[in-house]
Image (tube, rainbow, N blue to C red; front, side, top):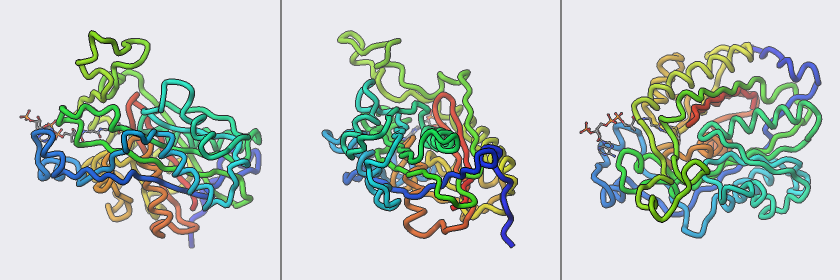
Length: 340
Ligand code: ACO
């Protein structure tokens, strides 16, 4: 018999559970393969494949903004949820590549999809942003302040990639994923969530230029400061530790064990990180949903795009317990257990 999760203290207090009622995603048309990258930097398909598992990634068109991709993913999610844009009352866009520093990319999305009754804000939690958004949505819905929340993870990482740095440029891609959250009277939905950060590691994954600390000027324009800087080995180590701990916390809070989980949807950064987590959690790799071979690391969009693919291909089915777990610059991490 299927194990019942522990009731969330939040939902039992308010008797309001939160479900993901629709998902959507969008990827740009242009494919950049490992072979294409070999023509740009000193690398090989063999190096990229064995170190990361990535075979190709998508690159947005020059005039395609983060909000364009976000809006396309959002409309698909709304269509699946059978929710009209005018009925959305909160739009959260998780992104490290906003259209502009302000206004929020969520405001551009609002205009593009016609969600005129929504409040809009962006979430800056790097690759962990989409699940931070799920947590915020769940809080707003369970506290009865909002009914329909659109959570989007969207990135145009190609716009902040240093295309001369082989250590980083092979890793990233562009895309968007979205989810609609509502209370629909089901017994379960989002069962547990966990979010966390550690500001001690702000210097292992960051973009130093383009903010108030270091604006881009004529003098520093040649220094590639408005691009991703990363200490790969340290990021790798911290990614495994934090995703492992976050997974355990969400499971414990839900009163479930790894055996109960039908599918794990992890951050799509590197296959070796996912293998290390599978090994330590003792969950067979086949139960992990992986699509990073096609899209690379799309930061805040990654888990949202993977969730939509898993949903639309039937990899996750109604009643399944799904664990999502992510990690990003900050450092930030987040996890959630959902009954699909
Ligand atoms: N092609 C060929 N050689 C390369 C490349 C490349 N693209 N990149 C680096 N190398 C070389 C290095 O120069 C180094 O050469 P050297 O030994 O002569 O100095 C050698 O390969 C080994 O480099 P390492 O950095 O030791 O390689 P490692 O096994 O650590 O793999 C990687 C690098 C893939 C970046 C790994 O550290 C990693 O995955 N880290 C986590 C990255 C990540 O997940 N980042 C994003 C997460 S957060 C977010 O999503 C924003």
